[in-house]
Amino acid sequence: MVDEPDPQNVNQVVEARKALSGPPAAPEPPGYELPLLLFAGFRSLIDKLHAELARQGHPDVRPAHGFAMQAIGTDGATASDLGRRLGVSKQAAGKTADRLLALGYAERAADPADARRKLIRLTPHGLDALARSAAIFDALRDEWARAIGPDRLRDLESALRTVTGPESFRLDAAGWLGGT
Image 1 (tube, helix red, strand yellow):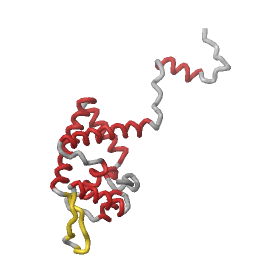
Image 2 (image 1 turned 90 degrees about the vertical axis):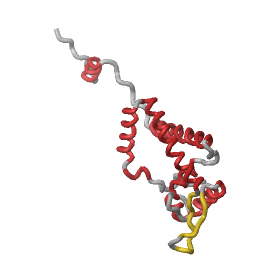
Image 3 (image 1 turned 90 degrees about the horizontal axis):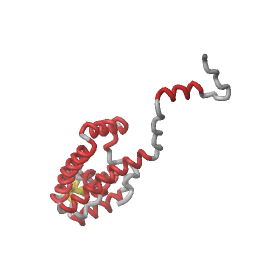
């Protein structure tokens, strides 16, 4: 004997398939959780980086300083170049550069290509901070690999490269570093 369909239940086929497939899957997390998790991961890495930099002799380096030193690079930059690379005004870039100068991480020097321009260059102290940062980031990556497994970490990195694209490593995301 065949069961008669319930005319009041319009989802009988769907419900029957759900019953056959087992318990329902966990609901997808809300969309706002993804940026919060990504930010929490970023913040965790940056906070650990700066705690270790402080232990290694660089207690005054702040995240904005690290971005600015990366933007200055080994060849130096003018305040205008720095502002453009960081996506901030020339004045904001100059203020950040002044702070790096005061802390001994950068210096001003004449531009050999144009005597009218002043370059901001990293000092040995600034270059040391960047070199230590690179080594600390390597250690932090190793820590994450131990926590979630090297394959899962590589998968995470690969997935992030896929969704962020090749422009993701630019520092000049206008407005992102809009302060000092």
